[in-house]
Image (cartoon, rainbow, N blue to C red; front, side, top):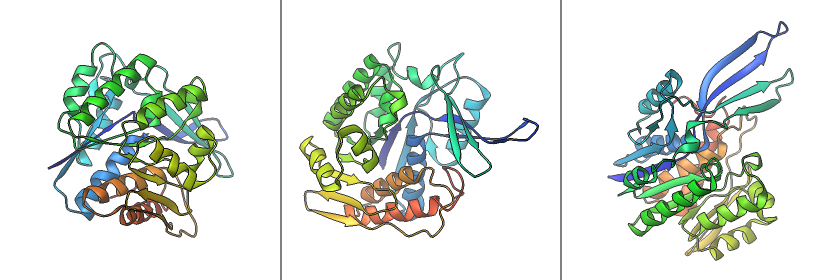
Length: 308
């Protein structure tokens, strides 16, 4: 049985628009980059590869009805939720997507007091270490790092280091959100520390430019290898991704979609399908093609999690 654990934050999502009378017409949902990847990874393992695997999501939520609904929805996807911490009196983060008359979207966040920010507070690193014991693959992102205070990031890295020593492989997507960091310097430092533990890196070119000033995919891959990462996938939106590993380096073209509907979770779904394919034994180039196919399906639907 392959065991995967994804670490991060999932928030309540409100989407829609304000009517002329200012009465909100909103839809309720939830979203989070690592949660999206966990769901698409679990779907791919069960539907595409028929692998004996479990995918767990590790986060902190409140004791409220919204947190209850999140967990129920994840369980319907086959996600193991036993590692979800429930913090009494706390709430999940919240974000709202506002769509204007021209279809343009704006995102507004209320997450400063989110339960996930205390994932490792008050000695919870011990429980985290126990949850990760025996994991084959651990997945996290730059957002997983950014929501934590500096001391908790240090604790997380210590726990990941122990898990790696026990045989877990770590997969990491930078998924840079500047507003979550005090400054770029701190973001780069945390990402460099995580890179030293990473087996599979899945950054995007936009992040490479913003964080490191790298404008070339080959140079970006070389930099990740220099940090000690064995397997690197440099994503580039709808363009080809560059896959680089000890046996070779190849650009894998994307799937053409004439009219994308919503690009939300394109990268997250790519990551999930890629990691599932690698766990199923496909080589990195084949896994990247599977990632492109998954992303192409997702961007033809509204929302991060498309119907099964």
